[in-house]
Amino acid sequence: MGRKKFSRYSGIGGQAVLEGVMMKNGEKYAVAVRKPDGEISVEVDHFQGVLHDHKIKKLPFVRGIFNFIDSLWLGTRALNYSAEFYGEEDAEGSGDASGETAGRVMTVLVTVFSVALALGVFVVLPYFLSSLLEGYVRNRSLTTILEGVIRILIFLAYVVGISAMKDIRRLYRYHGAEHKCINCIEKGRPLTVHNVMRSSRLHRRCGTSFIFFVLLVSIVLFFFIRVDNVAQKVVLRILLMPVVAGISYELIRLAGRSDNIFVRILSAPGMLIQRLTTREPDEEMARVAMASVEAVFDWKQYLYDTFGYEVDESWMDEGTVQKSAGGEGEDDAEPDGIR
Image (cartoon, rainbow, N blue to C red; front, side, top):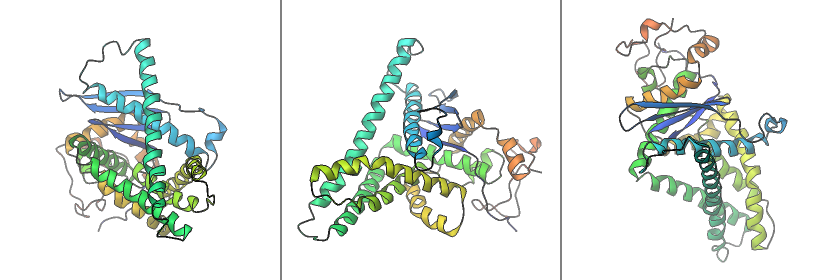
């Protein structure tokens, strides 16, 4: 008889990068990349973010804004690092002061451009497309709802469209490997390739779910914008995005720490979309994600403190697989390698 499904918040999170995975635990993060020669390179560093240790970053609904900015900044940095292994030119001299400064400037420019592009495509464009329907739809409230629907459709089209690219499909597989590692640990399982591969590739605290919360919350907030001037409508929508991000962060935070029926219903659409933004990884991808986790997180101590499991080192051999009474179903079986 399999044991009841349950998970405990671990505090670690991450994202997929080019041929690798970035994992973050507190201020410490690691980027593990499978190099062209097959070896795994792991860079470990610290990231404090905007307004480090300031009280304002702990305020509900405000902390989400800074968390979003920090995530963009760190994510771009991690992507740049992974891209260095597959760039057309050798990054010689990148370790000197001028190279580091240029890297920071590039990170800032890419982040700003990404935010501007996202606002244009997912905020401004849906408004103008919905405004074309005003001649047919006289109800302003209905027009706002249609705007939100168009925004969601554009997002889905974007996700599906980029998945046609070979590199993005591999990125989605590393995204799945990232989730599998976190799910493996939070389900109380030792971090082995076997346990990682049988864990779910979906996770409630995923950035995909966060974006979907942003889309839903924006529909509600934009519903109350009652101005006639087109420029004012566009500006107000842009100015409200930090508020939308703050509310969405609290929702994703709640989803990661609770498991009641309300949270499951709230998380369902985002989990469904994750089936588009994640793919099943192979074992080599799982090993890359595991290397990133182990560089920043003591998962053995976490299992002991949280689940009361002491890892049996004799079971950690990759060739040893214990069949549990719960079977091989995803997230159903007894954790392996514990006593």
